[in-house]
Image (cartoon, rainbow, N blue to C red; front, side, top):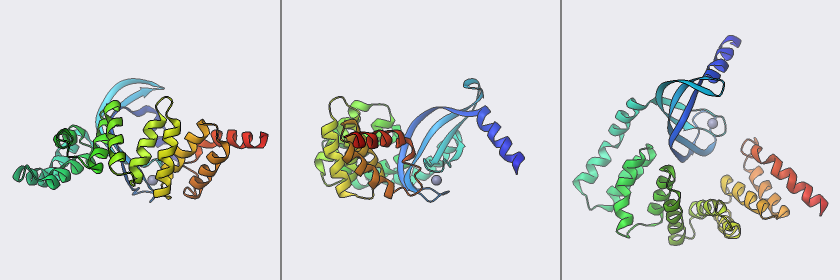
Length: 259
Ligand SMILES: [Zn+2]
């Protein structure tokens, strides 16, 4: 058993994934640890590495069910994955081909492509709806997710904004708009406003609490930031998701003691 762990540790050092592309985050339950979290899927190539240096490219993979809590993941060769995902999407492709004007069939196909991590196909299916000005909040939100994954942040921001404007009660729409605003210069107050609305609508959304705490910390509001981190800690009993924020939490605690 110890030999196996040793081999695995060395393999992890020598064989690394690089050039991750088309990263898609999907809410779900980790098949390994059972955590309700955002599982990611992406494409990446494995490289033989010498220390931090990539030496020789190896096989291209599709990585999926990547869990931020326990670091579990599945993988399948990229070529096989494309064949498999084409088969998975085939019924939805056929349904839209039979009824090209059917909005429900188009939405079903776009959602299927996105769930499979097929981003260009998702965009090609959704773009006509937004271009025609007929998209609802869920469709704008999916557009935003696709555009983000395709590396088009400006258009993605506009799509996040459209989703939150069309459905202000949608917790995920407010959270994601808040997150995007927090990355823009001079928008922290507005980001906090949207994140507060998000946690009010979905008090069990750990990610929204973490974003809210970070934004409040950056605004210098130590006591309300700590309140948000405490709310996050109640949703993260193992403390795994909170671990990267330890330093910021300590700074807030020190500020409060000094006040
Ligand atoms: Zn897990």
